[in-house]
Image 1 (cartoon, rainbow, N blue to C red):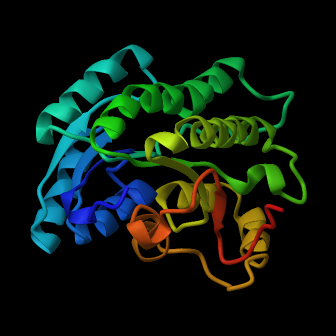
Image 2 (cartoon, helix red, strand yellow; image 1 turned 90 degrees about the vertical axis):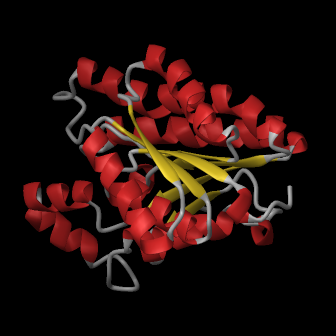
Image 3 (tube, rainbow, N blue to C red; image 1 turned 90 degrees about the horizontal axis):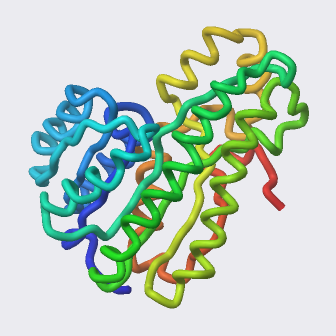
Length: 255
């Protein structure tokens, strides 16, 4: 696949704020038409409005609760009807449960699995034929370094959800690489609303956590995460496939 980004269309879940929004901005800057998806339509519309103001790039907002798997078929159909193609899928939506194993809610775990690996898999299945029709494309799934923490206490459930996404990405890379589809996972550490809420809830842990980042800062959703994703979707990264890439200032070692 060697298509210029300004000819491509990206579907991004959780695009109303945080990392998803940052990725949307960075891709739109390069001319990618963005389909911003999220539970709150107003937030997604605000993302598209900002894109038009900053870059003059076309886009569309669609409201959808990714955790309702039955709605994903209609979501992809509606997305394709917007610009008649799809080239990039970014599975960013998340539902997190940070708690000990004994305190973990099975209902919460099931929700996390639904919003995370189950929705990611279903969207990958639905989008794959459109990527093939477009002559190839990119799938970017978001995971977490939670499974690589020095102490996994209270993060087991969340890490399990995210590790499942990494496994699905690797399988897609192997099964669909010959079709011109590249599938990669990013593990971002970014100044998102979710991170801010966690830091407020666990201030002492957050302070200690920040000190473990060698670059001594938290990534910016657009400049650090979004810009990398845009590069990953470009032809310059055409041989990068099936990888888990930590965007965290050197905090974790995935090896």
